[in-house]
Each structure stands twice: as C-alpha cells, then as structure tokens.
Image (cartoon, rainbow over all chains, first blue to last red; front, side, top):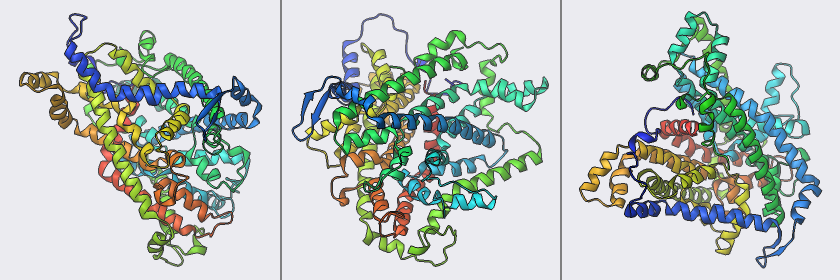
Length: 318
Length: 319
C-alpha cells in the first residue's frame, strides 16, 4: 500500500513458479492440517456464528429454555419503532464524523512534527505512545475527574486563559467532544503508522522540489500527501470502523452504574446493543441491531474504498 | 465482503500521477537506509519545534502525573488538581488491597492474558505456516477469507458466541476470554505469514532433504527464526487481553468479584467509590488501582517498545 517495505512483506519471489496445476497430495493435506485450527474457528466462531446470528435475528430467543421462537421481521421492524435505535445510531455517526477527521489531523500533525526534528524524536514518540498503553479503565477513571465541569483540571486550565470551559460530561452538546478528547489522548497508534509512512518518502523528491523552488506547503501537497496517501487511507478506514463501534469510554463514563441515569446524548450504538443483549437478554433484537450496524459499516467501507481508489497513490503497484 | 486487499489491483491502472514521478527503485533503498529525518528550518526552526514538542509532552503526560499525585492523596483532596499532594497518604497503597480484591483481579488478568497471548501466538503461527509454505486447493480464497474477517464488526458475532459458550456451560468462567484464541486470529495470521514468506525457501528444502517432516520444519526451523514477530504478536495480544472490558462484562459480571479481571474490577470500583452518586467517595483507591494496573503495561512497553512500534507500522502496511 505505501512504499514497499523492506523484507518479509513481498510475496512472490520466494515461491517457485507453478509448473503444473496438480497439487502434491501429501503437501496439500499437510497444508490443510496446518490451517485447520483457523478453519475450525472460522466455521464455528465466525461463519457459524454469523448464520446463527441471522437466524436469531428472526426469532424471539428465550435464554432460560434456550429456545428460539420464529418472529418473522418483528425484530427488524422494532429497529425503526424503537426511537433509541435511531438515537444511538445518530449519536454514533455524529461521533464518528467528529472524531475521525480530528484523529487524522492530530496524528498526522504530530507525525510531521516528530519527523522534522533533528534529534529527540525517539524520546517524544515514546512519550506520546504511553497513553495508548494505558487501559481504558484507567483513562476513564482519570478523565472522569479531569473533565468535571466545576473542579476538573481541564476547565481550570482553560480558565487560566480566560476561557469558561463547558460542563463536559453533563451538557449533551459536549459529551461527544469529551470522548473525542479521550480518544485523541491515545491517538499515537495512528501517529506511528503515519510516521512509518513519512520515513518511506524518498528524500530526493524533496531535494528536487527544493531546486525547483517549491515551498514547504507545495512540497507537502505535491510530495508528502500523495506518498503517504496509502497510510492516510488505511487510518481513515480503520478509525471509522473503530469509531462506529465505540464502547469502552462511553460505558465507563456513563453506563458503569446501572443505578445512574445516563444522558441520551451518551447512548452509543455499541452500548445500546450491549444493553439489549446482555442486560435485557433480548437476543433477537440485539442480533437485528448487529446486522443493521454490520450493513452500515460495510456500506461506509465500500464508499471509502471507492474514494480511496480514486485518490490513493500506490507506489508498490507500479 | 470488502477487504483492504481488494482494492489494490483495481487501483493499478489509475495510479499514474505525472506530476510526481516515482524515483527508480535502487535509489529509493539508499534513501530509506538514511535514517536522519528530513530536517527543515535552521536552529530557530528546530528550537520552535522543541518548544512545541515539550508543550505537547506536558499535555500527554499530565493525566499520568495527575493520577500519580491523586493516588497519594487523602479522601477529601483527590479532586484538588494539585500535582504535589497537600497531605501525603502513602497508606492508600496498602489499604487498597483490603478495600478491593485487587490482587485477585491482577492475578486473573495475568493468567488470562498469558494464556490468551501464548495460545494465539502459537495457533496463528501454525496457521500462517500452512498458508505460507504449502500449496493446496483454495489456498488463495481461504486466505482472502482470513483477511475478510479482519473487517468484520465484532457486534455480529457477539450474541451467538455468547450462546456457544453458554451451551458449553462456560459462561461465568474465564474460558470465553481466551478460548477462541486456540483458533488463531486474522491479523496475526496475516502478519506471521508475511514473515514466513520472507524466509528463504531453500532453508526448508534443505531440511526436507535431511529428512525433517512438515511439523519439524515448522517447529525446528520456522519458529526459532520468527522469534521477533512472535514477540510482537504476544505483546499485542497481552495488551489487548489486559484491556478487554467488554468480554469481562459479558462473561464474568454476574459472578463473584474475586473472579473479575482488572478492567471489570476497576469499573466496579468506579461504581463503589463513585465521585458523584451515592458512593463512599473514597476515590483515591480507584486512583491507586488504576495506577497499579497501568504500570505493568508501561513496563511491557519499556521492554518491548520496538516490537510495538514495528507491529503498528506493519498494520499500516497491510493491504
């Protein structure tokens, strides 16, 4: 996708050309034996599970008796009747639209900054990576207080600049930005991918551009951007899928305590699905919900791939 | 199903961009070997960048410092935002073990994470070797399926997987938190296969001549050579398992708190000592616990940093 990596990732050279189409029986059996753990897992935990899920989504499932009663399209009709489904979907899409571009911008900016210092970039990279290593529970337990509207450190910090910070966790308009903020704190995984892509941009390109009198901005858009477009595209897709499945932060900040009422603005799709499945045990409805988000994610991914094909510059396919 | 793999051939025809002719391959390798960053700006430019970086470092480190300070504070001062506690209360670190079954949680999490990481490393490597070395019918399409499962949203299989474990009578045990790792995991299979493909095939042919069987080729030759990628997979999965809140919520929440893992335990402690509604307000214990369960990850990173970075960079290249 990006500039072809050094060793290990190119496929063809090590494989001798296939002379005849017949397989060596012994070799083929051994190969199948080696992949059998995955094959078994795929048939049970992925394919089998998906078929089962489809079946359950057309049923009322009773966990106590482990029986499924046919329900026709009732669960799917309920998707449109239950206002919370659309609320959760709207919240989740809004969050994704807010979070993904910000994550890309912040990660790329940090990577560009790290890539442009002469020394010390290794140290800063380590520091920036530490939040990524922090368990979500620890992050949430700290940010719960940092984001407190009255005493939280973030608003105290803003006050130093004369800015009156919002009620991050109470004001419905600020709940999603709160979660975005936590996500941005741990954005370094994305940054590392950008950094690796930037390191692969040949320096001669910049030297030539310099001779031709191209400025920094021009260099970024004419050289850097196309050369890292593969990494950008990859991050775009992965972050979008992750954002549409956000769960941990929302659960920890707003839903950890079942006795506490959570604001509507914090109801994300993943959280509502979890509640329906494992708090209410509405397995049929939860499965229908799962298929809805599956279709939505697939549609979004296909659109992204189509767009990507238009804009991404694939050096390795030359 | 769409995979990142699918689009590459499709794009092949349309990637020619006349404004930026790619350089010849030979020169590029030289350029990549040159590790010095592309420096821009003179001394002033570098100084400005350093000031910026130090400022950002403070922002990234602040929550850690805040947590460290809060973990030493007495009850009433946890929220005071001082980075140096007004009153030091190191006893928090002893009392937390009386307040919460933290040792159980850490023990459970270490057990599960070790098992999960070891199993997935081994199983993924076995499968990857199958895809890398042998020729068999449908190998291409099957590997395509491996890649496709990487894009599958977890939500679709959440309920049926629960029912599988439920039918096996294993809900309430920690088996569902590591059991599926017996069957390999798509991304690790992909990564390990790439690594195996990079090994010279002659090594294996020579071993074959010496009478080593297929398993011996994997166990005695491929595995010892792939220790670095083994470590990457192990570390990634260990971290993922250590962080896994949702599975613990699904499979262990109804059981005794002694059975909890770290994420589930701390989530429950956040309820018990809630800073807002009705709890005891002894939030300093949540802070101590949060710090103690973060430390192992930071230590892991300190020792395995280059593996983590390498693994992440590999992720960016797939496709």
